[in-house]
Every structure is written in structure tokens, then in C-alpha cells.
Image (cartoon, rainbow, N blue to C red; front, side):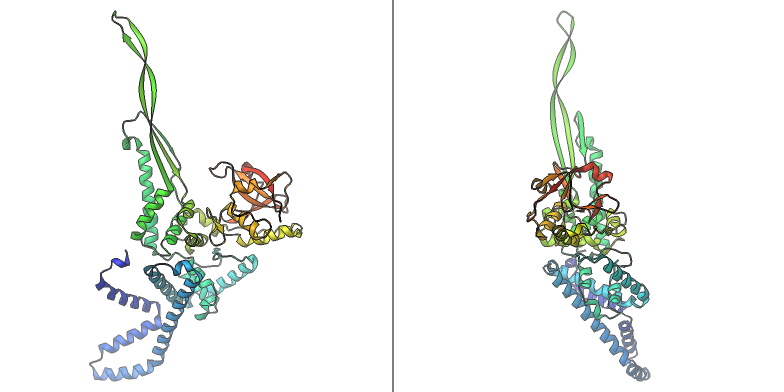
Length: 499
């Protein structure tokens, strides 16, 4: 529900509820609070008052420690929140209610990390070791939060436990780098009930649409023929929740998201219903005045209802409705799947980003002796693992296929293409039959569009003699070109005349 709709008289109770909730997260503070409650109940009894005084004196150091711990936790949580705002300007410009709930969730998750830290010390230490090993192996300077969950427990509150032990069990070291704020910024901060509720609401809208198509004759009665052409009705839940999170500046409730869901639905599904009237002829037998029968061709109207449903693809919608900051947030959520792979395990993105992330590939050293090609690859490999974002053309928004190639060519200093599509890149290339590392490779028919539909960077052959490209698939990765899929869509190699 919308926090603004709460009656004013509930606010005081809600605040006290939060205090007790935080105490539940912090054993030391909770103990101190219960000591105070016991003392209050015994206030009218002299003997107990004396005992309380003695006990209070003995417990004074513990209460002081609990108070210090609570103060440090609050300061650390405040620091993490401010750092998240500093590192993510889009969050800083969100509305006050969004920022309030973001801050509350940061504090809650941090408190959980402190409470459960001791229980998972060994697990977290192993996690830190594995994460360090992974970082050393990949050596990728990435804008997005690391999305591999092998040895990295970044689900829900566990993320903060990992960060805590990365810093050697020092609460202050949790905020020593960008990892804490990056993790917060890339996480879904809405409540699970609102997230799953939004997905269920969208699925229900899709079910209604499918039901209408299945019963089109009753929806539009009276036609002689119904011609229905419809794309499959589907969407990926992570795409939906990432759009909602970016659109609502990090946090949304189901009530707040309802109008957004309807807007997205209208943009994803384009339903066109048209009436067509054909003049047809049928043979009729008639009788003349003398009783003789004869056949005549009689014209009549034949009514056809044409129903066309286009699924524009929900992942293509963000670039048309978002500014750069929101699109950047959307790309960030997609890169990490909100750090919640547990939410929608049936999603295809789980396999792409978590279970089967892009494999490492070493380009044969001989190819890298070419200085221009080496510059091209040095720039391109910075973005391996970035998610595919339709219309994206920078590290901030991530990339689509042509946006990736255009950006790499321009920022490597080899060829200032500006922002071109796949067809545009083909148009400025010279078609070649003997490709060299650094040439472009073009494809057609990878999705429903005329002309060239996909482009990648040819990087030569691997050790087995298979041709390889680096391209923005989903995510950005290396791929062999001799697979049946790429062979069936292959169009041409193209060469640019570098500066």
C-alpha cells in the first residue's frame, strides 16, 4: 500500500514498530531494552530497586557497548545510503518517499548482516576467497556489479554478510569501496509481495488478452470470416521488474505500479482490428416467367475481421520511454537481475547471467601483434558480460549489437562511426571474402527486420580453426561462427579503413 495513504495516527505506532524491529536485529540493543523494561516494572519495589541499581551498575559497560554498536550501525547505514546516492545520481534525484523507503531497507539489511555475521563467518570467508580468485582470473573492469553467483552469495540480506567479511569483519570496512553502494544500487529494493504481485498482475493481463483472441468470434460477432495473426504472448519477469524499478526510482508498491503496468502493456502489445469487405459472387438459380430455370452470378458483401497482434518485446520498450539516467538504472538492474536469482528461476536470464555466464576466451597472441586490432580488443573486452539493452550505446546504458560495435570503434580511436545501426555499419564497410581480425561480420534474419539485423567483431580463428566473433548477444560475449545458427544467418564480412 502507498505509505502516503496511512492515517496520521498510525505513524507513531509504525515508528515504535520499527524500533522494536531493529532491536530484534541487534541482540545487544534488544537486551539493553529488556533490562529497561524489567527495571520499569520494578520501580515501586524498594528491594528490587536496590538490586536493579546494583545490576544496572554491573551492566553499564554492556549498555554502553550496545548503545555504541547501535550508533555505529546507524552511522554506517547512513554512510552507505549517502554513498549510494553519490555513486548513483538517478537515486539522488528520486522523490522523498522513494528515498525514505530505500534508506529504511538499507538499514534493515545492514542490521541483518550484523546479526547473522557470526553464523556465516566460514561461508563468507570462503565466499571472499572465491570472489577474489574470480576477480584475478577475469581482470575485467566492469561498470556493472559482478553477476556470477558461484561463491558469491548476493541474494537478499546475504549480500551484506559477504561485504562485511570482505572487509575482515570490520563494520566500517563494509563501506571501504564501491561494492556496497554498487550492490545496493543494483538490487531490487521493493518488497517481495509488491514484486511478485506486479508480475502476477501483468500475467493476468496477458491471460485476458489471450482469452480475447481465443474467443474473438464472440467478442466481434457477425463476420463471415476471422483472420487472426498473433505473436506469442510472453514477457520475461526480470525485464518487467527492472523496468518498474527504474521507472519508479528504485522502489515501487503494487498500487503505484498499476498504471505503469497498463502503460507497458499497451506499448508491448499492439492490437490492430480491421474490417475488410470483399465483393464476392455466388451462383443462384432463378426461374423465368415461362418456368424455365437459369443461373445468374449475384454479387454480395463478404465481411472479414482481420486481427493482428504484435508483441513488440517488452525489453525493447525502455529506450522509447526512458531518459539516459533511467535507462542506465534499467541496464544496471538487468545486469544483476536485482541480485535476486531466486525470484523467477524459470527465467531464461538465470541461465545466461548466472548458470552459464560468458566463457573466458584468449585471442591468439599472434593476432594481437597488430597494434590497431589490439587497441580494438582492449576497448571491446571492457564490456564482456554487459547485458543486451535494445537501443543502448554506452557503458552507462549498456549496449545493443550495433551500439556496442559503434562505441568500440569510436572509443578505441580507430574509426569515429557515431551511432550507427547494423545496416549503417554495413553500408560504410567494404565487403570482403577473406576476413582479418578486426573486420566486422554481418547477419540477417536474427529478428524481424529488413536488411542487416546483427553485427559483431571478427577476432580470427581459435585453436581448433573455428572462426570467432565478439558481439553483443545477451550478454556481450565471444561466439563461434561455425554453429548452425550463425551459419544460417550469415550475410557478409566487412572491412573499415581505420584512421
